[in-house]
Length: 347
Image 1 (tube, helix red, strand yellow):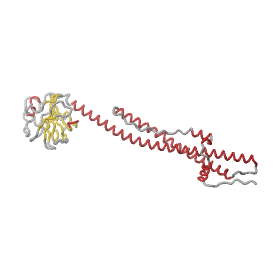
Image 2: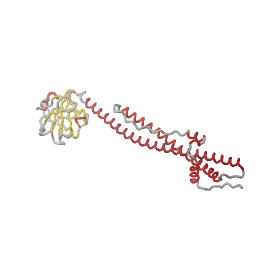
Image 3: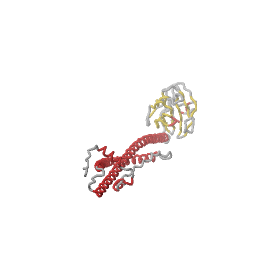
Image 4: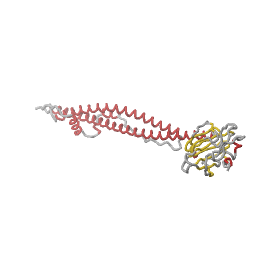
């Protein structure tokens, strides 16, 4: 007697779970079509971590290398996102295929060894049909698993790319700030050097001398003829000690004063430099003509700018404190040579 095949209305999840449990995990049973599909899956190899620029590499080359690295990450992210999007469609199709195969396999297995009435040949045919269905379903499930694993790899790759980009962006910001600082320091150095390269002709300004803010006295010559009678940089009583700043080849003076007290021009001239510079802190360089300059550093504030014309006694800035007490650092230069300032101030 022939038994009719049972039609299954089991849920899809039950069908696939039952089919997967009945399928051998042996890879040798996979269908040829599944092997062809597997060849289309290219594993995503993790990128090496972003290399730090070599210490000896110039800032420009290091920034260019970082920019190339960031561009590579952007390109890889775009490729990975596009592949992940395409993979979603493939996974959905593989899932639908697995469900259809699972239902067919479930119906065949519920038929058992029947129909028996067809004889031995019919039984063999039915057994072969069940085996083919099992192998096809196994191949479909394996393909879907590979697709999902590949999706996980792509997701991890995108997470790593995001982390690398953040790290590289932070590194680039720091390097760019360092480059700007170096360029700014170089600009200050050039401006400081240029301040001593040119000078106006003889000046008609007169000097104000004495530490008590006395009235200016007319002098027949320029700065050179005012040696010993220059106006003192600070009004009132001050302590003076010899000093020099790093990078100079001659002596200067540290003149103590009250924090915020006015610092005066010792002779008339034109402001050649007014900015912060290295060990001088904030400083003002005044060109007095005939290549004579005075340097007033360690200022808390600057009240003049480059190109300003100042007269003797005019306020240049205020006394500052760079950590060694309130003082003004004072130099006199002739061209690029630093001269001893004491005799010029009447010491």
